[in-house]
Image 1 (cartoon, rainbow, N blue to C red):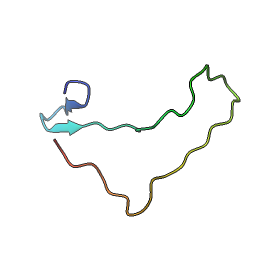
Image 2: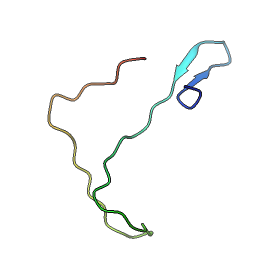
Image 3: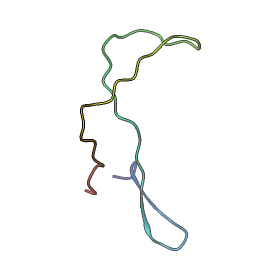
Image 4: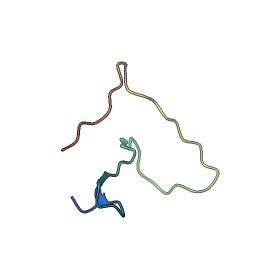
Length: 50
């Protein structure tokens, strides 16, 4: 939980988020390598607080 929750200077809880992904092929990624991003099917929805 410490990795995804923090406190603002006023003490309010701050929920941090990131990007989830699925790796289809392992290996070394170097600057200039091509990547492909595919969004999941609609409807997109935000994650619920835990």
